[in-house]
Image 1: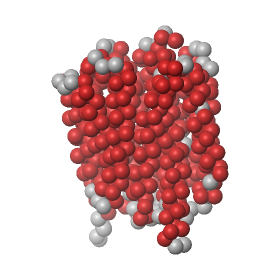
Image 2: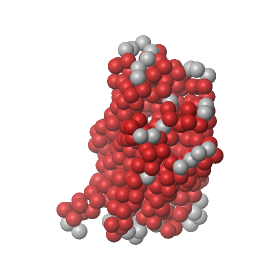
Image 3: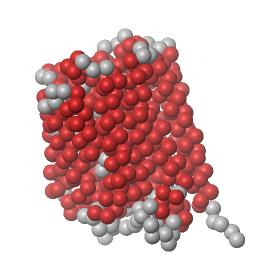
Image 4: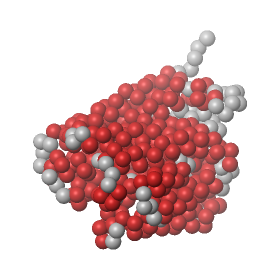
Length: 410
């Protein structure tokens, strides 16, 4: 295969997987974006609203660990398409909800759809994208997710503000239908047979010869990676769910301005991932990049909590937090890849990324309780605390990987 053909193949796979991932992240915040409409419509507390998002992420987290095994057995393409279809169904169900129980059911179905993306996406990227462009593939994957996070509240609040929240959710159902059609149209590019199996990771050697499908669970580094995702996701949950509401209370800004601060966070994070792709590709010390990024983010979050800057500066600080955490994204994925044994990519990414959903589930409830206790500043204090804790897990993963890579002598 010549270079031009390989480039086109890589670009097509990266684009298709990125579109699917962006759709997944778009659905992460469809309920959070509509809090100003759902709260009075159903007479809900912030804790009850947080519980809806907790249901979504608990189901997604548990399902994600299981989906990794299904991906390794049945192939990533079919699993990915099924997840996209379920997201569309969930939006239609949520748009017709007339009780809290129906909202919970819609959140449950959305979680079932969301659970497939990380094991399916990363399996496709590892199998179908050449090694030279893999870091950039991870970068685009992260960027598309952040774009989905950023566009979701903009789209939903725009439609809901001019019509109603039901129409906004029904409109959101069109996105997965379009993406599903594109995946089916380009299904040959995502064919299940692997182009190459990633080898040479430090973890691969430690499980060589072990045929058990669960052997990767013996690896300490896998659970360190899980802890990394869990802790960082708790912080992210605070930004996704109640950062905008907290900014309104702390700085007296309008909801529109607060929503734009969240959007600034997401787009800046996407920009950071572009640079992070180049930075990660040229570095072997991915944990150090992550530590610097999250240490900076933690400090900025505490500045926001102090409400010691004008409202316009709060928007800038949200963008800076997004920028530095975005830079760490590709390094994070490369760090996880180094922990994945050969032929277990789906399983490892499924289990590890279930930490992301688990953290988002816990965070949604935690920050809902903080807001119900009337502590908007506490939202950013807790965000900063968990961002600081991420540093410890990244250090642990990095040290473990470096030790595993050192040849053992008799």
